[in-house]
Amino acid sequence: MTKLLQFNHHHTLRFAEGFYRTRSNVASLALATSPSQFSGGYCSIPPSRLKLSTCYATLSAVVKPQESAFDGKEAALLVDELRTNFNTGRTRSYEWRISQLQNIAKMIDEKEKCITEALHQDLSKPELESFLAELSNTKSSCMLAIKELKNWMAPETVKTSVTTFPSSAQIVSEPLGVVLVISAWNFPFFIGAISAGNAVVLKPSEIAPATSSLLAKLFSEYLDETTIRVVQGGVPETTALLDQKWDKIFFTGGARVGRIVMAAAAKNLTPVVLELGGKCPALVDSDVNLQVKINFYF
Image (cartoon, rainbow, N blue to C red; front, side, top):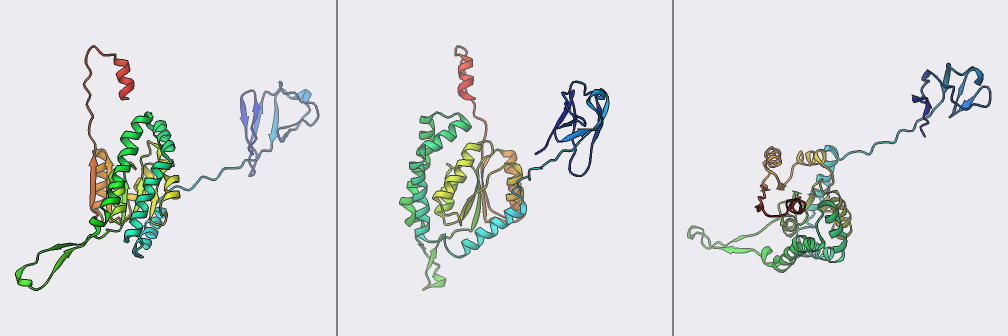
C-alpha cells in the first residue's frame, strides 16, 4: 500500500529503492515522542524544534499490474485457433449450424430483459422499441434461417454445355472460413455468417459498452466458443483484428472507417461487405416543442 505524507499541502513519497527528502513547515503536526514517528517514517530532531526540519519518510508502493491489451499477437492466436477448428469441418454440418441458430433464438427468449436493459443503458431505448426494432427483428431473421437452411445448403443442379456431354454440374455452397463481423449484433451479417457455416469473430461497437459486455457473456454461454468469439474494445483492438488475414469482413458503420476497413482488407485481397450509414434527416415544424423533439432524437 502506498503511504502519502502531507506537510501543509506538501507531499513526500519514498519508494523501496531510496528516499525523497523534504523541508517543510510541520509545526502543526501533533507529535508526542522523540524521535517522532508518523506514517511509517521519522523525524531526526525532537518535536520542540520541528518548525523547519529535515524529515525522512519510509514509504512503500505497490503498482497494480496493467492488464494486457488485446494486441496483434493475441489477435493472430485467435484467428489461428478458429481456423484450426474450422479446418476440422466442425462448422460445415447442418447439425452445427442449426444448433447455433436455435441457441441464438433461445438466448433472445431467455435473456430478453437483460438485453433490453443493456440497450437502455447504452442507447436509452425504451423497452417496447428494443423489442420491436432489435429483439423481434433479430429473432425473425434467425427463424427464417432455421426454416430455409436445408434449402440454402442443398446443391443446385445447372445445365452443362453440349460440348461436355454427358457431364453434369452442380453449384455447391461452401463456407469461406474465418470471418470478421464489425457490426451490431442484431444485424443479419452475423446470423448469415453462422448459417453459411463459418467461424466468426464479432466485434461490437465500443460506444455501446453494456451491450458489448453482455454479448461476450451470453455468447460464451449459448454458442460454440471454439468457433464463435466476441472481441471487445475500441480502436486498438479493431486495428489488431484488421491486421489479420480473414476470409471475409463485414462492416457496419460510417464511410470514414469503411475506407480503413477496405484498405486493410485489400492487403490480403479479402472480400468485404460494407454497410455504410448516412445522415438521418428529420423535419421539425415551427410550432412544435423543440426541447421535446431534441430529447426524442438525441
